[in-house]
Length: 519
Picture 1 (cartoon, rainbow, N blue to C red):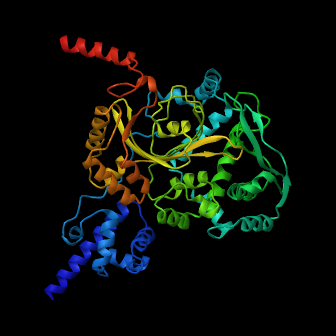
Picture 2: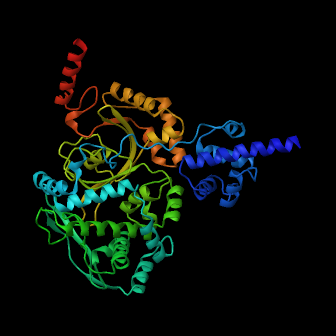
Picture 3: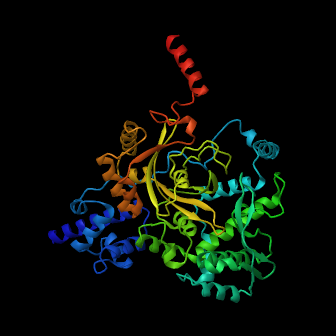
């Protein structure tokens, strides 16, 4: 009897530990089951059996414990002792790009003052109404961690969670909604649009109210792009009843989401409407082509490789953007950059500081950012990078993978997806601050880039296995590098430009401190 009681007690502790690890790493029961099956199809548990293990109603086999230990990078013996870690934590990034600062006096944020100040701000900085609208949308995305369940459900109700959807499936869905498809033939042309220099531009498609989708014949040679544009216009029919109030889908010089008749830099309510609808339809299209649960499993099977879209005729852009929406790990960022340093799309769910610029053009870029470094290469292979970002006293640790691609008009650009590693380190009881200092010291000794010390590399490899993101280990094998928001304020011991710009505020603080100490 006593032996049975002891067995039940051990089973309870083992199940509790597995559940704690799973929740700490934001995995559902289904996610963990899929991960186990990836390693050993025969020993992998069903969702229901895994639930019974966590609730102490079943005793897992030694092999299954070994699999789970491998996933979470733990010793097998740890699961069988009767000690529990401290309460699982889910640390947020040290700073947030979207959380409002509690400034006083609060009246400065009143509607009446903002209504006067914002147009003046846009006019003086050269920020267009479209750019400002996208800034509002990005802040909304980031505050919601790029999770929009209503749009997910709307897309799944149309696609019935089928995955993958073929091109014919998309045409059939459009037809079932009463949509007609018409084709047109227009080649690329040169357009300045929102850029400093002209780019090849292609009008891919547009919607003509109430029920006609016009597609450029050029898309026939690119099924992945054709599927996306079809899904995008299906979204407009579902979400807005096909009223036609949205911008054409364009690649190249004129940024998608901008009204084709908007030449004035002043703020216009239509700028917000068009930009918001572009976002809504884009998100819906991605959810239609990649339903959340099955797409998460697809990414897990391929360790979040960014160039797997070709397997299912999905664009690399869609795959990378979708990662931040479906991954159990919430701390992602995403950039889409065009030469010489124009940011077309940005998402910062992990609060990564933006490079210095005016929301599109980077005026003082740090060339060590992976997304800018890749602009100057011709390689089309993905490249991973571990980076220390220094912004004042706050040091951040990121891993990203970037890939150079071409848009539908043939313009080169770089797509970059990345994660904040500090929350993952802390969730596994590593001291993220010490790890960052260790890597930073190595980088400074190497002039700004250097191999990652063995202890830190082991931690990162372990985190990569837990998160199931293959390019973290790939980045850990290469030199880490120090990056910063602007090159003229380089935080390296040996600044890239030979010297670091002296900050007036710092000198004032030094004078104040000196007077107080000697006073």
